Structures are given as C-alpha cells and as structure tokens.
Image (cartoon, rainbow, N blue to C red; front, side):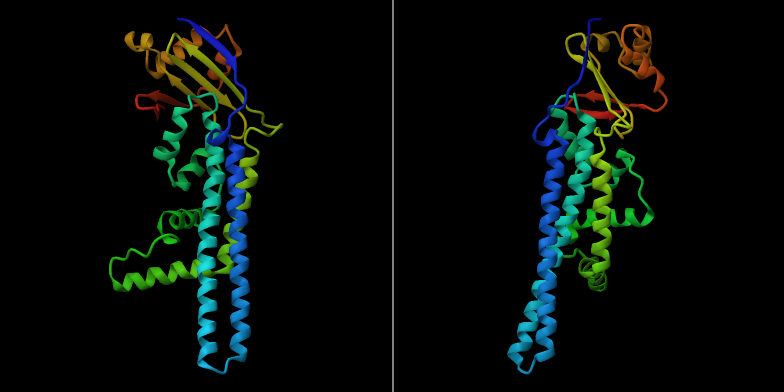
Length: 283
C-alpha cells in the first residue's frame, strides 16, 4: 500500500477559516447591542412621555415607542443568538482541517444545522444547567421564536407560550445572561488551535490513490481520526476499525503519527468518510 505523510498547515479561507466565523459572530453581537440600546432609548422616551401625558395623541405616541422598543429587543435577541451559533461553528470547522473541503458544507448543514446543543457536546464545552437552558432558548430563537409567529396547539397554549417568549425577549436579566454565555463560548473557541499550553497536531496520510487518514490531537478539541478507505482496502475487506488499527500498528515504526494514534486509541473518535460526502462515527 502506498502511503504519503504530511504535516498539515493552516491556510484556510472563508467558511473553512475559524477566524472568519468569529468575525461574523462579533458583527452580529455588535448589531445586537445597537438594537438593544435603541430599544432602551425608546423605553426611556416612553417613560418620560408617560409622566407628561395629557392627550390621547400623546398616549398613542407612548404605545408606538413601546412597540418600537419591543421590536428592537426581539431583533437583538435573534442576532445575539446567531452570534452564539457562529462562535460554535468556528469551533466545529477546526475539526475539518486537512479534510476534503466538500465535507465541511455538508457537515455544517446536515449534521449540525442549528443544533447548538450537539455542537457544544461535540466540542466538549462544559456548561452549567442554566447555561444549557439558555443555549436551548437561543436555538429556539434562531429556529422559530424570534423569527416567526408562535405555532400553538390551541388558544390557551398560544397565550402561555407567547407570554413566556416575550418575557424572555424583553427581560434584561435574560439578555445579560445570554451575553455572558456568548462571552464564555467566545473565550473557549478562541483557544482552539491557538493555545500554546495545548498545541494542536494534525497529520494526514494518503492511502493508495483514493483514501486517506487524518489524525488531530490537542488544540482544546476532542481527539479525532477521520478515514476514507481506499478502493483497494474496500476490495480486500479491510475497511473496518480493527483493520484500520492493524494497519496503523503494522506501520508504527514508520512515523510518529502511528504511535500517537495507538497511544490515544481509547480516547480517539473515528469518523469514516463515506459516499455522498458525509462522515459516520464508527466507534
């Protein structure tokens, strides 16, 4: 079997570059704060006008100010929720360095989409029970509750759900809590592959003409190995976990990569690159 080993460099751009995801997150966070501050200004105007109201026209003006405040707050929550998602996806794309680019789009859409809890779990980010609840809310805001009308089962549940949703959107405490979660996730993801105390190592080995193995360890991400079995391996029925590690062990004297893979075998997650450019976890 022909093998080619390389140490992988980091020169990704666009959606393949974690920094660009973080830049987009900062943009959404900035816009969210602008809207929140705009809403606060409208609320102050409404309170001031209320203290001086003497005509029905002025009362109508107060209602309009409150309505503008509520709309600004709702959009603010949607944008900060998007910012949280963008941060987490900045972490996810680091899993795919040195792996064929065609997998990234498919994995982000099919495997993760807006499933923020799954992303946090895969990144092994530790959150409190309260923070997980906030993340679920952020996910709901992105999917529906800050974008579309409430979808109730009946009239009673409509008002109950709408009130809970509005309370969260308009709550300063809730906004402050999700802001703290945003900053915590940002601090964590910024250290992925950029931490001198936990440096990342990535190796890629080409197998025959159409297969490969990629191993990444360190970098504040769970250890992961991605494999695409070559046509020859498939023909020889060597396309399973046991055969993979047998191959690695047989060649362990050839490169440090093989020794690392064997040393971390119990903690490495193995993903197979299968047809239609998807990854399937195999252990």
